[in-house]
Image (tube, rainbow, N blue to C red; front, side):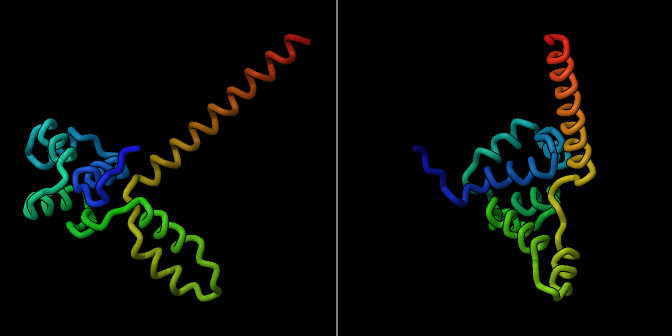
Amino acid sequence: MTTTKPNHIGRKIARIRELRGMKQEILAEQLGISQQSVSHIEQSETLDDAKLKEVAKVLGVTKEGIENFTEEAIFNIISNTYNNTSNDNSSLISSSVNYQPTFNTIEKMVELYERLVQAEKDKVVYLEELLKNK
């Protein structure tokens, strides 16, 4: 079993970029560097502060956001924001106002809808095959 270092900046940058639906080529273009340079950054355990701030700005997050990023934190934000069961909606409203998803919600909805439609098409094909075999 391979253990990974929890503060591998490059992996965090890659994951945030993926969650934002951004390709390496786009990040490279916005940073004014080559795609190979972005790949190198994403393989690096550390990055100097100036470059990290530049990458963070392009990704739409703070330098600290990259440094402190964890998958668990994302799930906690979602859980705390949308599964708040208290009757006081003020905390739900304030956390929702401050929550900025790192992905395009419309694209995700379209993707889910397309998967649902494909599942229905597959079901129809399956049922038609059952009817033919009777």
